Amino acid sequence: MGGPVRRRDTAGPIGGVRGAKAPARVTPPARTPVDPPAGTPVGTLWATPQPGRCEPLRNRQFHTKNARMKKDDVLGPAVTLGLFAAWALHDAEEVAFGPRWLRARLPELRERFPSVPERAWRTIAATDQRQFNAAVGVMGTIVGAAAVAGARTGGRSGFYQGALTGFGLHGLVHLAQAAAVRGYTPGSATSPLVVVPFTLWARGRLRRAGVLRPTRARDAVAGLALAAGATILSHTVARSVTGAR
Image 1: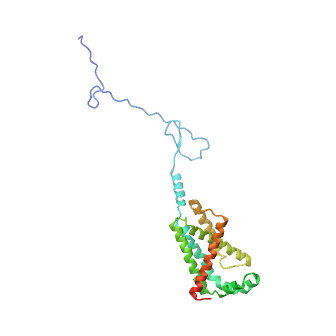
Image 2: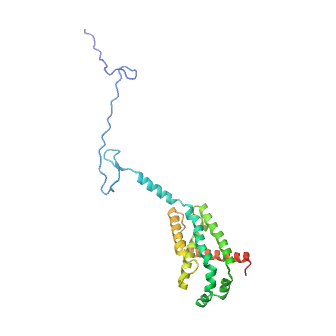
């Protein structure tokens, strides 16, 4: 009756140890919704991971747009190998109408441009369809090599970018020729439809990818010289192959 009173543990044994107390249950604080800041576009999703703080959710539309931007930064074959395809369309016009147009308009051109050396007129008059086709084939080899170099280097090749610049300037020369004769010249139809648009588009893609080399006045002159040199080389090789003099 007068002995000490022992305290009874009502919690019972935990983990096999008598007298241990159960851990207190912690209730997480309630998340109070917070309005997005002023100026937030309508439709933007917001979350409140912590009380008093709001963060934007990157929804599916953001990821789709981000993936599209990364895809645009990658240069595909349309930018590099597309140079050869654009050139082929352009030179198909020159092959179809070039020699025939020159033979028909040669007397008129001589009278209109007397400052052109007579040797140049004789060379033009001696160019037949067979020689012209051979020259186009040689030029195709040069343009094709430039396109392949661009594809292998992701558009960084100086040879490719120089050929692209020369191709675009070549189209402008065709337009200037058409303006000088006040009429059609072979190549002037595809220049505004294929040559100039493709050059501008390809240069834009190179710039977006961060691989376009800075274009200065001397670079434009070098590109035009490359196109002129390739043309002279093509006709020289064609005369040698066809046996023309």
